[in-house]
Amino acid sequence: MADAVVSRLKDAHFGYPVQHLKYSHAGHMAGLPEIVPAWHGAQRNPTSGREVDPGGTVAGNAQSSIDAAPKVIDFLQKSLKIP
View 1 (tube, rainbow, N blue to C red):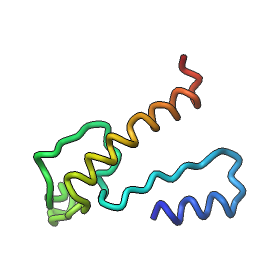
View 2: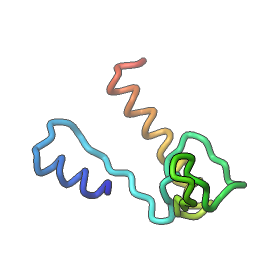
View 3: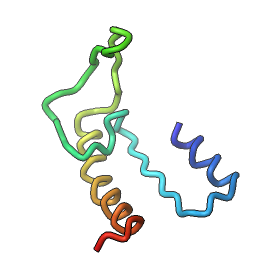
């Protein structure tokens, strides 16, 4: 899905820089600011009651957080002009 978003932004000549952080062994929990390596697997959706698996591996999700968190903070500091 993120590939499609980046493609649409480029096609629309989006006027701001776009950086797509992509992690091959991370799932939907990728890039979270906290790392919870002890938990992994399916969880029950509170609305539908169905079990959903956000994918990825424990190591892949943790590594994505380690890599992405400082990049997100840097982006916010620059964009919001925070010293």
